[in-house]
Amino acid sequence: MLYFQWGFSAGHAMRQEHVYHIGDQIRWQATKDGSVLPWVYFWTRPGGKTVDQGANLGDPSIKNLLVRDPAQFFWEVPQKRRRCEGCGEPFEGAVLEIRENAIRGARIYSTGEYENDTNIFIFDPSGLVKPMPEWSDYPLGIVYDLLPSDQ
Image (cartoon, rainbow, N blue to C red; front, side, top):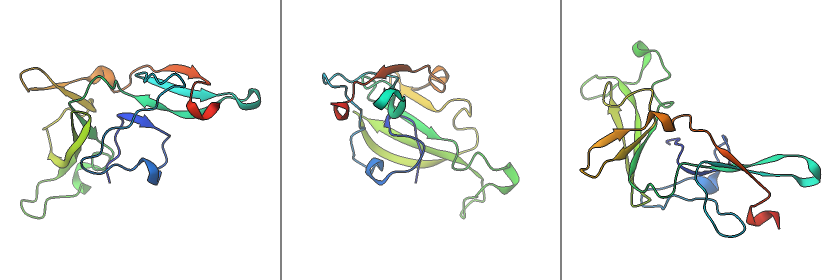
C-alpha cells in the first residue's frame, strides 16, 4: 500500500472507496458547478460549524508525474530500514508513476534516487524528471459549501 498526495483526498485515514489500483484514473473533486479546482480545501458549514470535506491536492492539468511515498521506508533509521533480499541494499521509499492522469505503476527506489525533500516530480517536455519541492507544502485555498453533496 502506498500513500500519496495527488488528486482528491478525503483525509488522512485510509478509506476503501479512495484506494487506487494500477490503471485507475486520478480522481478530483468537482464543485457544484462542475469545475475542478487545483490546490484547494473543501469545507462545509452545517449549522454554522466548519467541517473539512477533503481537498484537491495538486493540479488536474498536470497529467504526467511521479509522486513519492516517503513514509513507507524513509522514516526508519538507516540501520533498521527494510533491505532487498537479493542485494542487501536498503529501500529508500516508494514512488508512484502517473501518466495521462492514470496510475501506470509503482516501485521501490534506492537511496539517493530521489530527493528526500521533494514528493512530487513532473516530466519536462524532453521526458526528464524535474523535482517540484515547492509543491511539497503548497498553500491551499479554501472553498466553502461548494460540493455537490452540500445541496
